[in-house]
Length: 142
Image 1 (cartoon, one colour):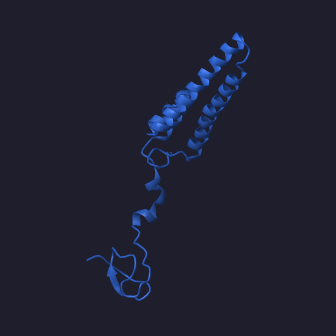
Image 2: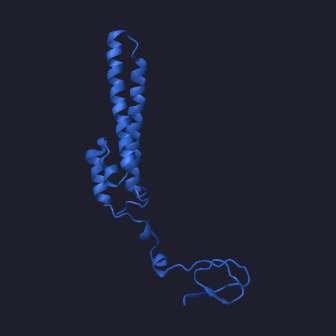
Image 3: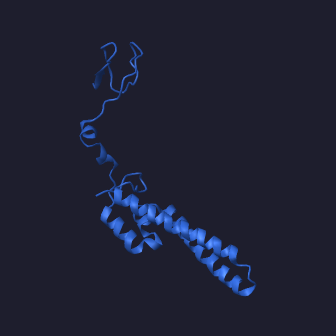
């Protein structure tokens, strides 16, 4: 039977208990030796750091690296932001040459374009320093 010793009263208790049934003291769970020897190994993504970085460098403008690491929703949100920037820009140019009131659309296009590019730049540096996470919350590292 799997038992551990209560640090407070010294009696043997079941491994599943977090509180000693004899004295009521809190008993910490056993930590496996594997987790102690390499705590970051459990947080490391199976996705390749090199592939993720290369996808960002060569195809970052379409956010393919987000899909590679499983962040499908974020990839689609980025696409929507990028498409909105293009649409606002086209509308702004059309209205500026039409009746002269297209400046609002151009400003919106610039704002959305800035968000689109800034998100990619932030992700680039996050990948470089090992702080970029995949869809499971694990770090994509070398």
